[in-house]
Image (cartoon, rainbow over all chains, first blue to last red; front, side, top):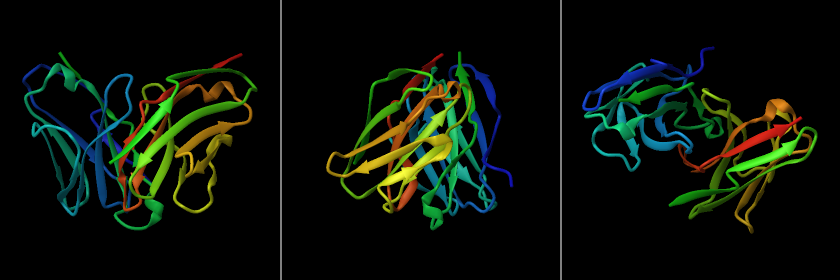
Length: 114
Length: 114
């Protein structure tokens, strides 16, 4: 049973560029949440997708957008990259109901903006 | 709104000594509480979670935590530290209706001395 998988694992982008990160949730899970973890800090909630719609959103600008596909996989898009967007981006999957609300994290995508 | 405060950004113990990592939370609704461990360059691994059943929660690798509502605390303990316990530890809180949207503390780095 595959867990949460994320791609790419590492990438380097230039300021002003756009980036797309991808996430496949754990088998059977229907909800995907995205987090940003800056160096030396705890993860911060970006947004959550369920039934292909953004269900919850944290305090992040509109440059951060996402999408969920019918197979429950998800993408995180960041436009007009800033140096401060350099971070580990974590995807977490869960079931909307049941399972004691356990969430599973992927290994993350390391984004460096230069 | 929910928040987490982890007291002590760095904790150092000797191998075999008691591990105590402190976490205090704030929540306007009954919460779920979690402890995660993060090894260098890896994602988050769930150690244990409190979901309103027993207040003393046992997790993996010999860790346990006690939910104390009166003190709004959820401290993590392990009777005897092992070298492999050296890592970053995060406490997190969420609403019971949506664990996917968790609020994390800033983390505590645990160092284990031989």
